[in-house]
Length: 91
Image (cartoon, rainbow, N blue to C red):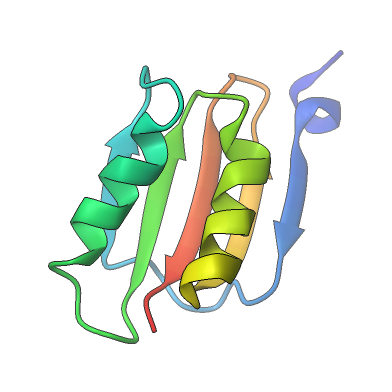
């Protein structure tokens, strides 16, 4: 399988760059969500952040967390390198 077939992506609004990158690679559940929630406390409403994670559970956890908290998941991407990338707008 080449890298182009290993990427799965859901994009809603890719025009706005992330103001901060949050690295949760190597953390297992619930680590990526805890790291994301803590980081968002310091981010003003309307800002877009990027979360990098390697926990496969984050693929379903991050969208569910965004819905529950009212934050907006703009993009999620599963790369062939095992890294999951999310762009979230704080509301």
